[in-house]
Amino acid sequence: MMSEQHIIDGCIRHNRNAQQALWKQYSGYLLGVCMRYATDRPEAEDMLQEAFLKIYFNVSEYSGTGSFRGWLRKVTVNTAITYYHRNLRHKHQVDIDEYVSTETGTAGFEEDFYNAEDLCRVLAELSPGYRMVFNLYTIEGYKHHEIAEMLGIDVNTSKSQYSRARAILRKKLEDLARMKGKFS
Amino acid sequence: MTEEQKDNGLEDLFRSKLEENEMVAGSDLEGRVMRRLERREFFRFNISRFNFYYLTAAVTALTVAGVMIFSDPGDEKGPSATGVQQETVTGVTGEAVIAGEGEIAIDDSVQASVAPLTETAAATTSAGVSFDRQPDREPALTFGPPAAETVKVSTIASSGITAASPAALPEIESSVVSGCVPLHVSFACNAEEGHKILWNFGDGGTSSLRNPDYIYDIPGAYTVTLTVTDRKGLSSSAGIVIEVHGRPEAAFEVRKNDPWNEGDRVEFVNLSTEAVDYLWDFGDGIFSTLKDPSHRYADMGTYNVRLVAWSAEGCADSVTVSDLFTDRGMYIRFPNAFVPNEGGPTGGYYNTRTDEESSVFHPVAAGIEDYNLKIYSKAGMLVFESTETELGWDGYHKGDLCAPGVYVWKVRGTYRNGQKFIMAGDVTLLKY
Image (cartoon, chains in turn red, brown):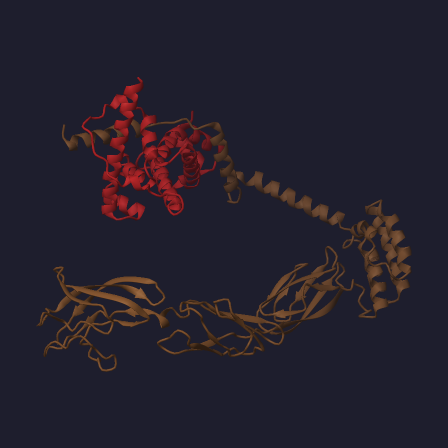
């Protein structure tokens, strides 16, 4: 197993072994990131490919400050944003029923009740705009004004999409809980 | 549990489960990424890969160059072939050419063992002047272009045109030789494979395609020339004239009484230019070929009138006016403001010519059978009603001038052809 520094240096020199090692070590993690942003697995794999190509050609730009893992994730998230923008026009449309705000239940969320696969699935059911905002805000931890800038939308749009996304997710998780309760 | 806590619960759930969520990327995916990576790296200069890629490229280039040098019989034959060429150019007689061709056929036999037989046959036959398009010659063409040229020379000699050029005399085929602008012409020629083709379309346009398509959009006569250059650089050309006729311009005017009454004749004034024949379609199933017809419509209504005009060359242009009489025969429109006479009620009857100050709110209408106008104040009170278009509102209600502001009107009625109309709008009562 190559050390992180070895991998970085090797990738800068376009060394094939180092590139493969980079893939082995981080592809699983970054695919997980892509899954959060994608509608389905093939889309996530497309994103991942693009992200890795970006990484391979721009690895020399990693400054060394901050974790390499974090840098990789940032590149991947940026790729997802680019992907979102590119598909904005022809693919991404919001279903009208998503605009109908859903009433909230009262149950809290038991962490152990849902697994990552469930969460990815409910995320994938969101429309891409909502998913972007929710991901960037909740998991990546960006502020609304940063998200607005990244996605080219208004700050208030970001906020309102976020709260709608949250309402929809809550509803979907509750439905899921009911389903699970029924079948388990 | 408050709303705030619950939402944080949702966020925490997603963060804890997904932030470090790892998935297994398949090995096929790795393969795809690596292939894309290789393709992109290939065109980037990269010192660590220099040997492998650029050596491969160099070896490939050298191989290709080598293959080209040793396999091209026509260009690389050296002195003997050039000598033949000279002979062909200077001596125009058929014998000289046939002699030269024989030599080349021998040269070619080095390359393709099938060739000599065909070549010899060709040479023998070509002495008998006409050997132009025999189907079984096609394979011979691929092996021995010189033979083909010889045959063509004899053709040239017999047809007596530009005998100095030994290259095949090009023949032009065009889909049309004359027509109306914009004229689309498909050209075709009999040039052989491998010969350089240059079309000049006579208006500055050129093409090197074998069978080009061209569109002329300016009228005129164009001389199209086709120049074919063979592998030895000998060229010959042919020409054809394409005539492009201009189109007439169809236009007309309608003259009729206004308001239009049942049984009135409508005069059509033809304003077409450069046209000699006409066809009118009055839209009610009646046609005319007169230049300036007049027509009486049996029913009042709206019609699409079409005029087609032809020039002497048979080029046509047409103009269609849709819904020609919609507005003229039957219409109703309302203004959106008026200024009542403050001196007192005028009664509401008005004269279109004298009501220049628009002191009465009334429609501009024609062809109305039934009519009912109601005007309401903003509070919803009916302030005026009329059942004749000649009676408008003077701005008074029960003898008092209404307050300035917006009033809502609604009108319903029937045109004289039975068509119903309902309209609504608002009008502003103004005060000087």
